[in-house]
Image (tube, rainbow, N blue to C red; front, side, top):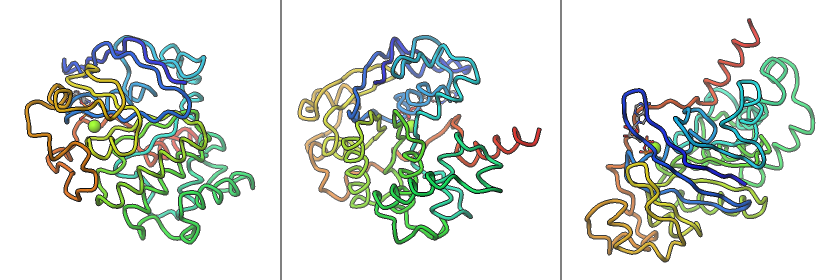
Length: 288
Ligand SMILES: Nc1ncnc2c1ncn2[C@@H]1O[C@H](COP(=O)(O)OP(=O)(O)O)[C@@H](O)[C@H]1O
Ligand SMILES: [Mg+2]
């Protein structure tokens, strides 16, 4: 279970990105976090694993207060949190299998994983996960030879390879076509259902969120302004979250292939560490 208590983040620039966010996510529950660009969605999920340091408030994962941990303990706790990104963040020159195994890096260490061998149980787990996400036939392909949907499937399998207690997913479908987006959303929700994993999915596509998740949280200027089932997300609520607009075309139209708002794609201010950067950092740590 994940619990946030009065989480607040003000960036050094003075930007207040989150104000007093409190919420609980139960095992197996998938929360769709919606809100316009700049609402604080990415900040919220990055504050949970402290890739962005919260200014105040608390984050609990199970019995552990993540906000109270020192560096070493935080590092160990981060292994319990799987992340999935919009741009997949795969290591391009590595195979699908190697990318998934890199999800185990936190456990086996960089040198062992790259220059010796992964433990056989890690490899069999990776095969099982690749089968689950529908990539059994692509295990030995290089990441750069895959389609967007396949890449995101690798991203999902890699996150699961950590054997996480929580999934944090930032705009998993923003680079995908509408049909592939729905397949990926369905896969994520099914996997969380099966495994009892709690998850937060940042998603700016309201219709897609409504179609696949049973709980939606709406952020507006860093505050939670809606928390409820998708069918309560009516025009009034959407106007609160996104401002005045004609919502008739948006509400429950995930079947429309042009439901994606292209103006929402731009992202700035990246503070998160990609797996490739994590790899580099691990390597440096191993060298020094
Ligand atoms: N590294 C940063 N430094 C300063 N301000 C930031 C940084 N990252 C995000 N912000 C600001 O915080 C607010 C929330 O941003 P973000 O969490 O990226 O929103 P979203 O993911 O919903 O688009 C915005 O006003 C954004 O400009
Ligand atoms: Mg974002």
